[in-house]
Image 1 (cartoon, rainbow, N blue to C red):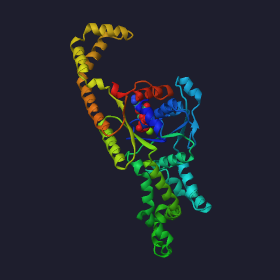
Image 2: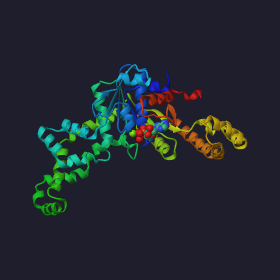
Image 3: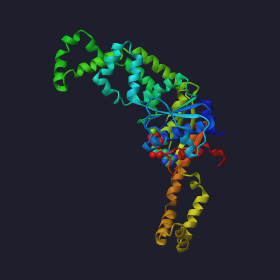
Image 4: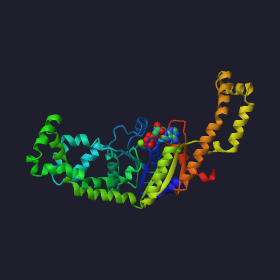
Length: 389
Ligand SMILES: Nc1ncnc2c1ncn2[C@@H]1O[C@H](COP(=O)(O)OP(=O)(O)O)[C@@H](O)[C@H]1O
Ligand SMILES: [Mg+2]
C-alpha cells in the first residue's frame, strides 16, 4: 500500500492545510477520490472554495452544508473505479452561523433575537476568522454523527495557515475578552441610561439611530451563549489533537509557502497534533537539478541548429523552422535558470521531508485537473513512492 493510502486508511479525519493558492482544495478533492478508490464506506470531502470548474465537475453547484453523494456514473464516465462512496459538502458560513446560534441559544427568544439582529447578519460574514472556526465546527459535527468513515477537510484561505489551529482558542478568548465586556457592560448597567446617554445620543446622530444599541444588544445576546460556545470550542480543539485526526500540509516549493509550511509542521509537532504528510505541489521535476539534465542542455546549446530545428518543426505540424530554432536556442540558454530553481526546490523539499513522516510530490500538471479524470491523474502522482525514483 502506498504512503497515501496508509494515511487515508488509518485516520478518521484529515485536515488539509497550507498557504493560500498552493493547491489545498485540489489536493483535498484528490485525496477523497484516492480514499474512495481503495476503501469501502463513506468518505466525505468538506470543501471551502472549489474553483468553479471543479465544483461543476463534482456536481457541486447546488451543494451547501448538507453532504451530497457524487454519483457513481460520474466516476464511470471519467474512467475512475471506486469502491467507496464519495460525498461532498461545501462550507456555508451563513448557514453555519445560524446553526450555531440555534444550538447554543438558551431559549427561543434569544435565538430569534440574534437571528433577526441587523448586526448579526452583517457581522458573521465579516469576521475574518469565522471561516476557520466554522470549518472546524462542521468537522466536529460531521464526525459526531458517525455517518462518515473518513472526513477530509479543505481549510479556508487565510493569511496565515496556523489560524485554523488557533480558531477554537480564539473563540474561547473572545468570550473572556475585555472587548466583549466593554461592549456589553454599559448597555447592561443602569448607568447606561444616565451616564452614557449623551454619548449614545451623539453616536446615534452620527451613525444612525439605534446603531450602538444594536451593537450592544447583539453582544449581550451573544454573551448569553457563552457556555455553549466555549464548551463546544474546547471539544473542537480536542478533536484537532485526537489521534484519529491527521494534518496534511500542502505547499509549493517557493520561498514563502515553504517557509509557512515548515512553520506549520513545527507548530503541529509542538502542539502534539499529528502531521500525516507534507505534499509539495507544482514542483519542478527533480531530474532538472541533476548532471544529466545539465549535459543535455549543454548538448542542445552546441548541437542545436538548422538540422534539429527542421526535424522538430516537421513533427510540430510544420511549425516555421526559424521559430523552432529560436525556441530551442532560448531553452538551452535559459536552462541554467531553471536548474537553479530546481536545485533550490530540492533543498527546500529535503528540509520539509525531515519534518514529516511522509513526503509526497506532485509536479506541475499541464492538463486539466478540474475534473474527476484529471484529479485521478493527480492521485496517481500522489501514490508514486519517491524512494523508488
Ligand atoms: N499540481 C498542479 N498542477 C497544475 N495546477 C495545479 C496543481 N495543483 C493545483 N493547481 C491549480 O492551482 C490553482 C489553485 O489551486 P487550489 O486547489 O484552488 O488552491 P488553494 O485551495 O490552496 O487555494 C487551481 O487553479 C488549481 O487547478
Ligand atoms: Mg482552496
